[in-house]
Length: 187
Image 1 (cartoon, rainbow, N blue to C red):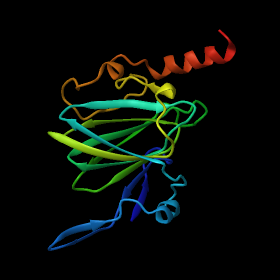
Image 2: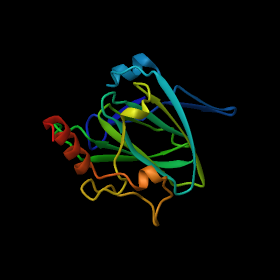
Image 3: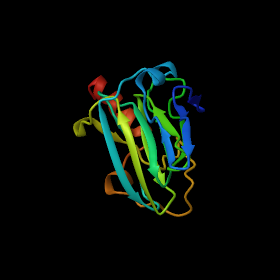
Image 4: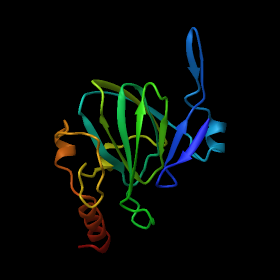
């Protein structure tokens, strides 16, 4: 099993060992001790499964007060998976890392707490599973617009993606930070 830091050191690309033979294949998709040795300190408390069709873009989602770390993998199909650092005091604030995950390459992306997460589907369909380090809390969720020019994600899609209303109408990261700053100062 290989743990490779991405352009943001806390975000890891994980390449599991796949054992293949004439019957098919076998791999471990999670092993607490091995993942801790690889640099993933969190334990996971919730598993999610998403099914999407071609050109769907989900995100960028995060939770403010109960941030979730995520371990993401495409079980079937191909996605471009993205993590954006939204920690205001971080040296990599506003930067992003992205990786292609497919049902055939078995790779996983670890996104630590304090990052927004999103992905776009590059195949006809995709099944995506991800483990979370904290429970989903809809009241705590924030959404950053997928094409925020200050972040500058280079999504590998040619035409406008399929979005839900929440993702399409989401604010820019700078607007969210400003709103939170104003709330803290009582404005």
